[in-house]
Length: 410
Image (cartoon, rainbow, N blue to C red; front, side):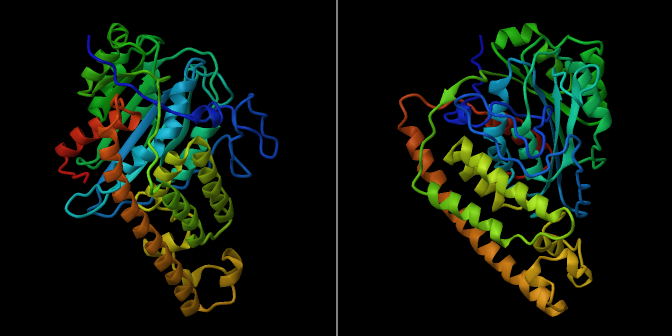
């Protein structure tokens, strides 16, 4: 019998709202549902929509590699542990790509989210819901992970793979990395859609389907999880979604977390959605701190990388990526301190914030390099080595796929 890939739940993640992974059951604005005893309320922005208004993904530069990951998560009643792991591991997954490059150019990371096995409002008759289409808005993704609820339901793996393959806007770039990760614990054969047909159809679109069975390895094999991955040249993994591990505190943690919060001051919200997005950014900082200091550190590191870009609402990113001409922005769409400035004044205002952001990001990157060296040595001294995490499991697949596409991750 092959050893299971363990998917640890970080200590303290039980203290962070017991639900996550993909939408369904969002709290009504202004009237949050009281959390179960022993759990901390999750912070959301003032208007968490049932059907999010997702900004279109900006067109990637001509030579920019594209990485698309669709997460299909079982949100039935037994999957609280899986959703906890998705929340706590999100920023570690993002950080896998923080130094990725092809020919010196960093990638555009797009992530989509589906929930299946849950009959909450918004799901179709097969208890499947697209929570988010492909997006580069990582705060929006985090918000919906923290807003998810679990409940009993039927898990139709073949059908959710078919839907994700057909509904999402997959890149036509032959060198794009197109990955589906589906996680759950029931047999892969449930539902009216034959998983063979669904997976083969995904493969024909250039999509690699990877399966994560939450439970015993051989039980997953018997439930056809391994067969499904093999059909699309993907990987089969199994995890113990309820496994808990102790995180190692590093001397750099407190400063990195503090710098991550200070980064927020360098963002310049504009337009009607800008303020809501800025509040979302703050709320996701709070949610990460609620999971653990390590989660907030990982989020801060992600915020210091090129993968964390907010050109849809932040003027600094929008101008940097040539999405907006700052001189043409209406005064009423600008923050108060910028409204009386001429074009030159606006430019100088944004440049000052970009310089401060760069300074903070560089300091975070320096501290994180020191932190990683510390953790490598600390892990060597552990009596029992840590088991693989969700981001570790996904990382194994990403490393393999990256080599195929001449993409370096370090």
